[in-house]
Structures are given as C-alpha cells and as structure tokens.
Amino acid sequence: MKQLAELCVKRPVFATVLILVLVVFGIFSYFKLGIDRFPKIDFPIITVTTHHPGSAPEDIETEITDKIEGAVSTVNGIEELRSISSEGISQVFIQFVLEKDVDIAAQDVRDKINGILPELPEDIDQPVVTKLDPDAIPVLTIAVWASPPTTLRDITEYCDKVLRRQLESINGVGQAMIVGGQARQINVELDPLRLRAYKLTVVDVARALA
Image (cartoon, rainbow, N blue to C red; front, side, top):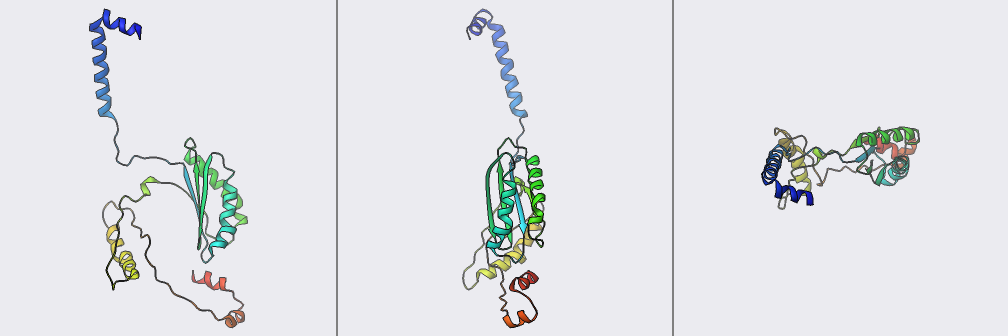
C-alpha cells in the first residue's frame, strides 16, 4: 500500500492512466456478462420413483421405500434422505452436497437400485431415477374456482378436458399439470363367496383394475 501511494505521488500521470484502463476494462466486462432469466443450474438432488399399482401406502413403505432407502443410503456425499409412500407409488428424494457431480450421483443411485431389484416385488414398474430439473418447475400457477352449484368434480373435469389441453396447445408450453381437485371414483363391492370360488383375493382384483 505504501509503494502504491509513492507511485501515485511520484508518477501521477502513470497512476491516472492505469486507473482509467482498469475502469474501462471493468465497464467493458460488465456489459459482456451473460444474463439469463432462468439460468441453467444443476442441483444435486436425485429422485427415485417406483410405481406399484393397487398397493396400500403401508405395503409400499415396507416392500419398496425402506429397501430403496437402505440401498441408496450408502452412496457417498448424501446430505439429506427423505421419502413419501402413498397409494401405488414410492418416491425417495436424495439431496447431495453441492460439491457432488449430479451425473455421477445419479449413476451411483442407479447402481444401488439395480443391486436390490431381486428384493423388490416382481410386478412393480422399473424404478425411475431422475435428476432435479429447474426447467421442469412451473413458472405459472393458475387457480380455478366456481360458485355453487358447480362442484369440485365439475371444476376438475373442466380443467382436465378443456383448460389443460388449451394451455398445452400454446406455443412454448411444455406441460400443464393439475394439482388437487377431485377425480372420478368408482367403488367396487366384492362378493367373498365368488372370490373364494374363483380362488382370487382382493389384491388380485385391485391389480386387475389398476
């Protein structure tokens, strides 16, 4: 710092020119900086999704989720591991440290999943390992409601058959999803005597209807 002060006193012209060069270089570099509204970022988060139609959440957790969690928990660099077990689907979310290469992490998880496939139910869909894609995060959310006598199921049917298709037909829209709502439900009552006669179980019927 002392030498810099001496330089400015003894050679003021040189110091002034040097400062101007640095200022011009800084301004030029500023305007060359890349600007992106949605920059490409690779988050070190991996999701393992497994579908098993017709299975209860309790069965999903014990037969699929727990086994997948136990297998992937040995992968290096995991910061957080959590899961959701719901009817017919298991989701395991694996968050790695920022220094972890997301492609290597995804391959490590796939290797662990392939190693336990014989332990999982035979009739499940192949577990899908995906990386978190910021581009897939919704950039627009639309709330739809209506006054009575319009029911929630009527709104859901309109959003699914009309609104969603119109949005997906717009240029630049990749996908439109419906969150919430009330889907149509059909209740099936089974006759225990007929089930025994045909040597079927409730699970067999549920899987056939799924």
